[in-house]
Length: 72
Image 1: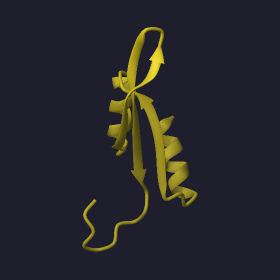
Image 2: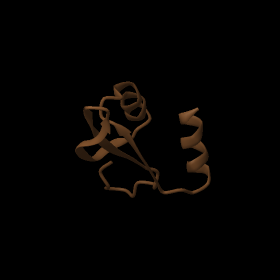
Image 3: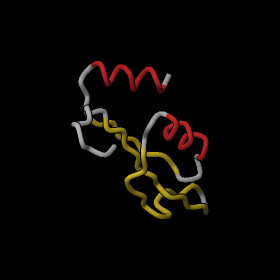
């Protein structure tokens, strides 16, 4: 389903997708990485769940076409 949403965004001309996830949600973060998302920021210990604290991880997927000579 996530791959379909990315493809819909691409067809709609959206240039950059962003999302965030809790740092301990490794399955989601692996899924996003497999779709090409990269981490661009992190808020340490930002999310509180009871007495536990977790990082908030920010990810992005750049859908803009690469110009010749650009590095991905």
